[in-house]
Length: 593
Ligand SMILES: [Zn+2]
Ligand SMILES: [Zn+2]
View 1: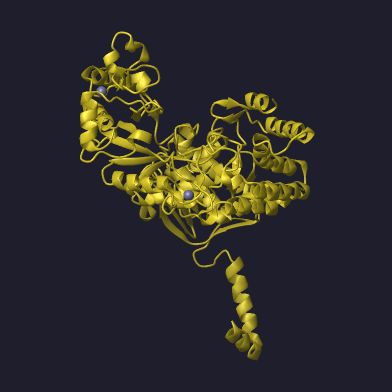
View 2: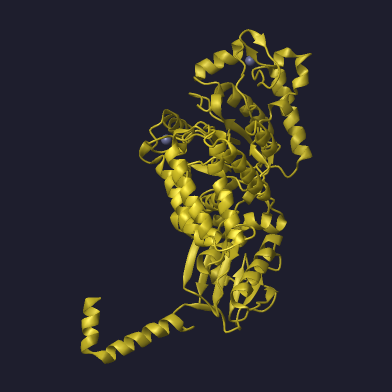
């Protein structure tokens, strides 16, 4: 830089030339390779879709048209590739106008795409069904600055000139199945699709390319496979525990041949009744209580884990179905008592193992936290990776016992998604606050960041956080960021671990934290520029108030006032539940006693 300035000082004429050249490069529509999609209210481009476009490709064209118009005011035409090519075209999908620009579609899979921009052409060509739509959203987000922060809050930067640099990339997502199970991502299929999520709970329809995986049932299917009522006539179908066949919410005796026969018949019936399902869940009930009869126990002991009886049972079903239904997979859990894989038994090739991280510390990365839980989880995922034909993860991201309680896991969410991908995981279900009515502890932010990570585990999460906070909390974003830093500081350097069923007395929710948090969030409320932002800040304060109320830190009339304030904001924000099993009203009744 110094050299250049010195050079220019001696030769002022050269400086002028340089400035002119830079100006030209920055503004010229004929800069080498740049693609000017629209300028001064005009465009030379039109959007071309295949004549046999599927609904998601047609919708991709409409979304691109809609957002280019929002950005530039220019309305592009959508035409079919049966029309004769013109010089400037935006080519979507597997398009006959592509010629030499065509990517290798077979490599793109169902969700990947090629993105090319080179002067006269913009190519967004993806695999079916979701690739082209994913490509449109990626272009809008990464190249044109569009953001979908919540289903109601989007950002579209307007410009007179829509110019793209030379782009030539192929993008195939690291995860084939991406699901954020937070209410904020489960309300609106359009919003979930814009985040390129593809899970069965995202409300995706044909225009979004549908869901990548369609489960039936979703999980914990033992009661449906072998109904509990059969206990009366066939106690031998049920688990032997401490010498007695038990009923209630329990597992089944998986060495019993009739249990297997009945389960195969039931799965075949499900497949007929749910022709859309491509994954059938044959999975343990959400409890322990597995069978320890002589046959079950002998096999489990030999294989070193009760997962052995489960996998042998699942394998028998999977093998039976394989010939008739080659595209269907059987999913089972590696969860709690079945988390450790068998020594030598291998899951059949059409089986998915869904490994669950429920016991782990989420304050620190799974890869590096010193806790015994995380050490064991590392051991299990390393053992499953080479033997699971397909490995999915059921991961956990809120405090699940207290939806409104501060959960210090922001530092760990990115390393954890990266850790899963590094261990061969192909599907990630991020368990969130799905039944609290929305607006759980920083729910909108969490849902947004998780969606970003599932699409691209290496994305710049700090940048996304900053953008979100600025857009959502406006003038109060500085304080909300301070609050996030304060929360994370409680667990940094291994000070305390954090688990999803931590009580309100957890070490990281100490007096010092609550005092500083309250002070920062009071300032945030004062800094809010309008009622909408102020209300969002009040919703962000609920978790701190929740702990103050739950631990009796505020007493006397102050307590009644705080509860009134908490309930007023919570109800206005649509909060209905404080945990999976407790409504807001039931909690309020308990807390006011
Ligand atoms: Zn048994
Ligand atoms: Zn930890």
